[in-house]
Image 1 (cartoon, rainbow, N blue to C red):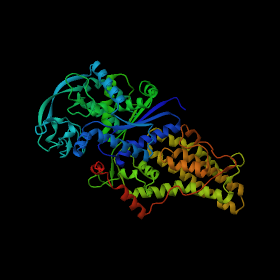
Image 2 (tube, rainbow, N blue to C red):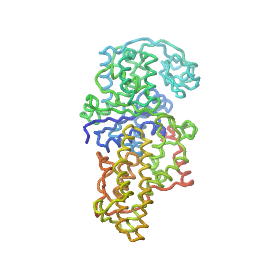
Image 3 (cartoon, one colour):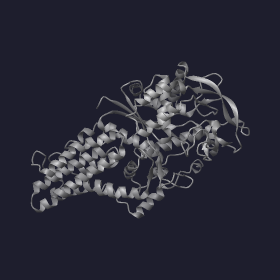
Image 4 (cartoon, rainbow, N blue to C red):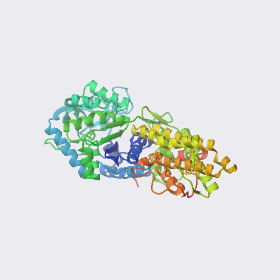
Length: 573
C-alpha cells in the first residue's frame, strides 16, 4: 500500500427527490470509478458521500406534500442510499448532514470564522410575503431571471443559465407557497466576508492551474476577477442548524454553508483517525467530484471558508463535470424525459448494472455536456462489451476447454516466443500503465477506450496466431502457448476494468478463469502487468458474460427506466 492518503468525495445531493442518471454521471459514478482505481493502484483511499438534508428545496417539497421535513429527508435519504448501493457505488460511508457530529463540526467551524473576524452582520432586502407573514428564502421565491429572462428562476439561482444573483435582482417575484406577489423588506442577517479572502483564494487557485480542468480553473478565476462579495449565510427558516449568535434565534445557517462541511463530519463519523489523517494532515490529497452547478461552490465559496477558518485541508483537485442531457433534451420528470433510477430498486433482470455503468462511463460529461442515447447504449453493449471484451474471454476459455480439457500445462519459460507472442506480452506489461495514467488524471472515458483497445489487442492476437489452425497442424504446444498468453491478458483485463465493471470482472476472475482472490481488491493493480496464470492452471465454468441487446430488449429496458419517481404517491403509502 502506498503511503499517500486520498479522500474522494462526491457532491452531497439534495433529498427533495431521488436521483436520475444525470446525477449519477455528474458525480457519484465518476467518483466511484476513481476511488476504485485508487484502491486498486495501492493508494490509502477513503470514499465518502451523503445526503444534503437541509435547505429550502426539501422544506418546499415537504410543505407541498404536507409532511414533516425530517420525515421527507430521512425517508428519501434511505432511498438514495439503496440506489447507490444498487449501482455499486462503493462508498466507505454514506451518511447525511442532519447528525450530531455534523452539527458540532459546523457550529465550531462557524465560531472559528467569527473568532477570526470573517463573520459580519448587516441588513439586506429580502422578499416578504404579506399573505404568509414571512420572509422568503431563495427557494420560496419564484420569478424571472435577470440574466436570461427564464420565468421560473428560484430565488438567487437560475437553473436554466446557471447564473447566481442577489435575491433583490429577481424580477416579477412571487411566493412559491401561496403564489401571491412578494415585496422587498429589510431583514437582519449574517455574512461571510468572502471579500477578505480574495487574495488568499486567488493564490490557491493559481496553484491549481495545471491540476484543475481548464473549464474549472476558468470558472474559479472568473469569480475572483469579478470581485468577491460578502455572502449572506443565514436564512429565515426553521429547517437547519441554529446560528450560535444572540439575536438570530429565528434563523438558521444557509444550507450552502453547512453542506460542504459535511465532507469533514462524514469522514469523522467513519473514523476519528481518518478525520485526522485526511483533514488535519497536509500530506493527504482530497478530490471533490462535482457537477457543473457546484463548481463555483467548491472552487470559490468552500475553499474561501477553509482558508478563513485555517484548520482543515483544501481540495487537491476539484473534478468539475458538466451536464448530461437525454436525446438532445433536458431531463424532465413531469414529461417523463430521461432515465430514472427508482426502477433499479426493483428486481429487473433486463437491466444489467455493469452494462449500464459501462455505457454511462462513455458519456461522463468531463469537458462538455453530453447526451444519453438509447441507440448508443445498445451499440456500446453489442459492439464493445459483447463484441470486444466478452468475445475475447469467451473464445479463449472455450478453446482451452475444447483443446486442452480446461487445463494449461505450460508457462512462459517452457516455450520460445515469436514476434506475435512478444507483442502480446509487451501489451500485458505496458497497457495497464497507460490505462492507469488516464485513470489517474480522472480521464475516465479515455481509460474506458484504452481498456476496450486492450481487449482488441487480445482478439487480434488470437486472429493472427490462429490456435485452431495450429491444432489442425498438430502444433499442440504452440496452440497451448497462444491460449496461455491470451488467458493472461484476460486476467490483466479483469484488473484494469474493475473500476468500471466490478461485478462482471469478479465473476470472470473467480468463476470462469478460476483464479483465487478478487480483481477488485486493494493494491491489485500491480498484478495487471504480471502473468497471473501459472503452469497447470484449470479454468472453471464458461458462459457469455454480457448479453446482446436487440430492439425488443432495448424497448423493455427503456420502459423500465423511463418511469420517474412519483414522490406524492410514495408518501401516500
